[in-house]
Image (tube, rainbow over all chains, first blue to last red; front, side, top):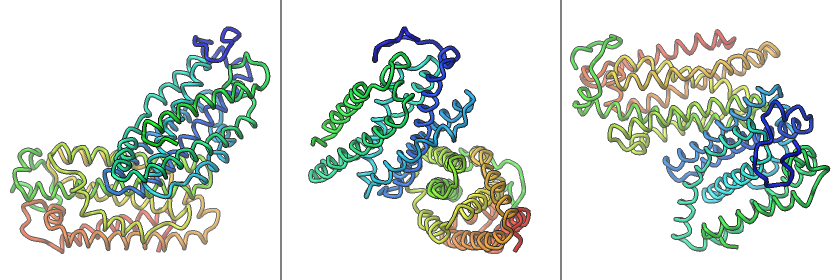
Length: 240
Length: 240
């Protein structure tokens, strides 16, 4: 396990069987898979609910398709938890309240807000998967990359939002504010999770080799994700 | 086309290419696929929404799984409509209002009502698919049977409802009433569709060979479906 060292270094740290012999590593991966699984399940629920705002059948179906893809991801993560001898419900439970809180305070009030949320959520998830993938054993990384490769349904959201801003530039101001609020709330809940789940936090900032909880490294990761978010919002015409 | 004759007779009436040369048959199949497609899309939406009543994560995931399966059905029907040169949105549109009305007046008020609705909806759909399959060309029948074979997720609902009634027999009375109401509202909307869509109605009661609109045959089909529903409700402990 010592071979991985610093954050960001690529290379295999071994497979699940060897890595999971370390109880700290095992606990961290159970946390990670539990958080991702509940994230996908609650994303399914919210996307399906936001489909009610759709202005037409094709739009409704597009959101339903995204929701359905999130459910498939949930299923993969759930099955993996069961496969490695964890109780999926137990692994998800610590993350129910933070994710439900996030969705509660970021309920879209119309179709465009729902689309921006779908896009932002999908993008943050992809960034996060990419950050964390390099710190995982081969088997867990394969799963995470598989779940990630199937995202990108959000191009639909991008096209619709861009079109709406072209038709009415004032919409851009409102959605820019909304995008910042989504990122702020996401960070706030993520900080809460990090503060409560030591094993997971250690994994996120450099694997089991890092001793103790490193708030600076966690902050750096959040900054990278926030920067990527800001760039995407600008590209979408939602500069702050 | 004359070889099929009476309602209920099994045997091939030919493939899509030969049958669809008859504009009445083509119109009827477009109606049928449009109705089924929107039925699946709206079932997705309702199941996903009802998942919010789930008492636990495993239950929530089970309802999300059913919703996701409905979306896959929708996709198959949608793709088939596009394949045969129809506009899927246009084909679905006549059925939006009847199906939305049904869902509006049968919004479950709790988890058990949602489960009974999922079970009843799934069962009626299966009965209907079976009724209509024998009247279809080979290609359309294959599609309908493929969509149908993938249902049956409702066993989950049956188990949960049975358990709830065992724990509190008074629940049975309330749910029996609910089951009757669901069937009543479904019939009411179906009658409305039948009255408005002549080509589809003719197909349902005996294919293109039947001349004119036969209310008696439609009534018989509805009776068969109602009887099957009543038997299922009794088996579930929801005798009226």
